[in-house]
Image 1 (spheres, rainbow, N blue to C red):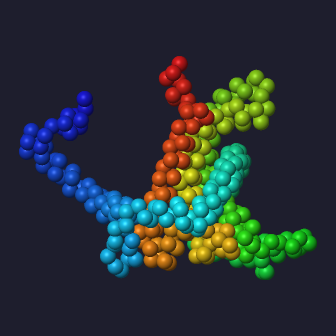
Image 2 (image 1 turned 120 degrees about the horizontal axis):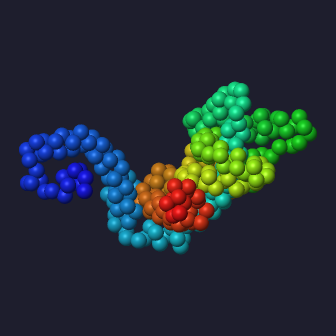
Image 3 (image 1 turned 60 degrees about the vertical axis):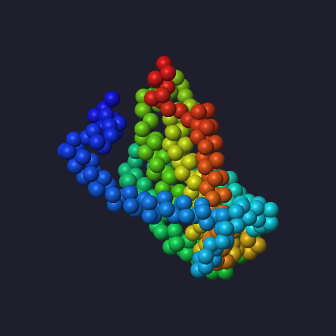
Length: 315
């Protein structure tokens, strides 16, 4: 048992004066973080959970309604189903594309070429651009009349779609806007690729393996912990998509609510309709859903994530 563990197991009265002073000094140093955590993190979480059982318009007094908010959400709210379907469709399409594009870009950026550092920087720069700014730029780029994309398509004799004005193209447009920042995940995959031992590739070359076989049998298994990490973060971030939808599709979610993401719907109910209790209930439903999906991904990791250190311990 370590010295720290022994000290934690002893009661306050058993500590000496010097140990008490040391403990008080430690608590004083971490007190700003503790206060900040309670006031800005734990406190709002507990408050939102309590408010989800109330009817509150911000300025009045919350009225306790029990499970009425949750009952209305699941039984009498068509926009809830619409927001869930839009968000799930976005996640099903965007997440695989992000993983595939991120890995492919990382493989290209992992080559030992002159000036490769410049290309790595160029691919990473879109990721650090504020989402509001990048979304506004993409709204202009995808403008059906004078946007850059449709203008370039017209040079080829192709009539471009109406993008954010067409219900069938709103979601693909937002997916395209989000993929513009895939360089951030590509950098993470690049770090994972650089941890793959070169001896594995050399041994595979001796055995006659080609590039595709090396990628499938060596690169992907060794990169699986990084893919797992990015997949978990991507799932959480995907279900919390708000800024591109708010900027590109507007508060209503665009034509026929084709861009009504779940977070955008929470914003509409909470701040547009001033129904904070209802919005809190929507937020907690999303939290529970994210926790369940994340838990399922963690459970599935035993079947496809390869940990070299763990494999060595089992031998």
